[in-house]
Image 1 (cartoon, one colour):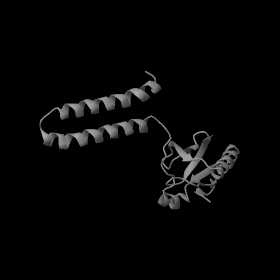
Image 2: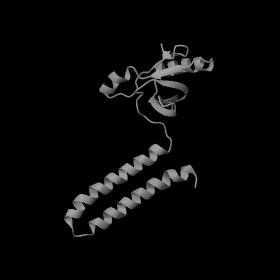
Image 3: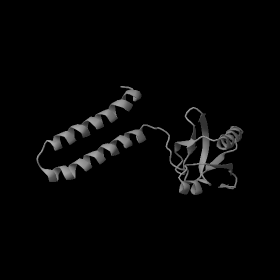
Image 4: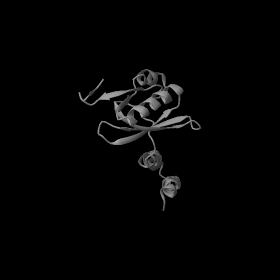
Length: 154
């Protein structure tokens, strides 16, 4: 099976298992069993479903909580998203999905140009703290040069 087939098969199997289990429980006469096991099965099914999608490698919509080293980005105006690849503090690459806006696209284009010139770029979500409180995600980001000689960002 290919990854695309697993993408549909795994959640379908989880949903089928939860439905059959709930149906089997509903046919019992024990009310206490129903009260305890139905919420557990529904929660387990939802948790399994969301876990499968998180391990498939799709970009996360999590916030840039710390500074990351910029690697690459791709703009998808049709989906109104910008996909950013960056190195985390553990030096592992991670994909982020952030809402599209022209200012962010301009900043990331500049970061890409500097990165291609050999100047490492740092990306962080400075204004996001304010926007997160208002309910917006990664509304604006900050991109700046990394000073490799000092070992700290400037």
